[in-house]
Length: 225
Ligand code: HEM
Ligand code: HEM
Image (cartoon, rainbow, N blue to C red; front, side, top):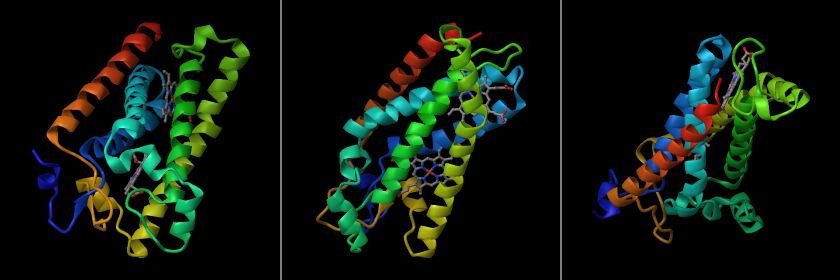
């Protein structure tokens, strides 16, 4: 099927392919689950860990999709080069993430990676140890647990607040970013290509995501106590 026929209106063209949109909303759901289960602690940490492995698989999928995904989902197409920053400052907007948004996305990918890694080395000092806890020294495990429960958590939650405020600010300025993250389409000038989003690519993304999830669970679940 031709990807353009999947667009919801002839005036709008595809910017976020379905895999990128699903990545975003699955990430949001998992984050909500992680905050709830992490705060309850105890038995819930088993679910916290499982959701963490799902988040890891989903994140690795997005990193790969950043190279092979739809045009506007690729890192090379939104990396904030000096030329793109200059164009943006002069009011020449390209489709996809703007340079500041792109920086913020790279920052959250790093923060999420650090939260995952520190969680895996962490312990609740009662009955739950992350899968990497036994492989690191006690000092490392303590530092990781501390990061995970304090600064790492605060930076991530602070990022989410700023992220939502940025979306609201853009809306007030007349840039409606949310609809594109929901249905995939935005007004794109004809000089720019649109993201391919046909069922073949969606199936490819599904297989890739399942492979990432499968590997994350296969390696980490047996190590979780
Ligand atoms: C991005 C992914 C993750 C997020 C957002 C997250 C978030 C949280 C939060 C909000 C807490 C509660 C901190 C507090 O006490 O205030 C927590 C605790 C904890 N998390 Fe995570 N976590 C993530 C991944 C993981 C992973 C992958 C593991 C291990 C497999 C893990 C293990 C733990 C442990 C051991 C605690 C301490 C519980 C306690 O001492 O009661 N986390 N996490
Ligand atoms: C746990 C909370 C959240 C996290 C971790 C998160 C993370 C992200 C990430 C990583 C991206 C980049 C997407 C990509 O290229 O793959 C993104 C974009 C976006 N997010 Fe979120 N997000 C969260 C919550 C929300 C919420 C609640 C909204 C709704 C207001 C939202 C709206 C958007 C929009 C509209 C974009 C596209 C921005 C643009 O056009 O440049 N996000 N988010």
